[in-house]
Length: 250
Image (cartoon, rainbow, N blue to C red; front, side, top):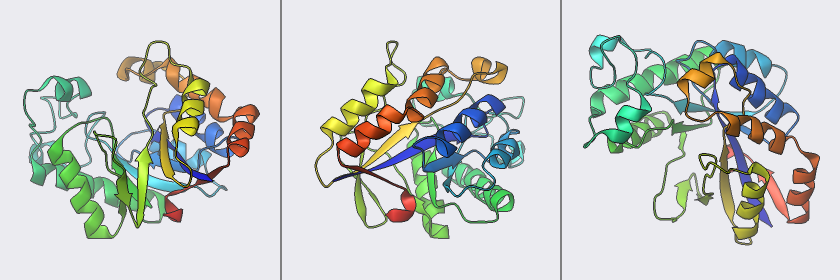
């Protein structure tokens, strides 16, 4: 038996993304969903999920849209317009410019907004699209403060510890130019060890003007909706002895 958490990130990014995530969860394989509380479309996304029970997590975001915190209090994270610095700025920076105290303040604000929106504590906490050691530290600190499972990152292939479980993170291939969503999940299942617990992160969504102008990931999102809702992929998982779980099971 192989256990897989199939997680969809970015609920709230845009209405098109929300529609793709909702379909992938209600009619597909997604069981855990990362929510971006600072985004204007987040309430639309949560509305689409009403009447269904999913494992909702805080997908903390410091590179898209506007912060919840007063921008004047978090200058290391924002530009002159008071909006978050872009992911491109993080990728091209020569050093980690994120101030730890400031990022903790914003993550806390997003945590509180998540609770206000959903009426519950996030079941897990992770970060969106930024490779910053201080961001990772801030996420772990806030998660520990509130007793929330922290879904971290690893760069050497070693598993991460979530709750009491070692979890292997499947390699994300959606940024490749020849991305084949169905082949990617097949390869992840085939390479997973028997008895292992694995995290498969997806970004399903449909395309609208906002996502086309604000995200480097576009067509791959629609490909993932199709894959996650494909009954043949579900059959493949069953035949491979895969059991789909959520963060609640860790």
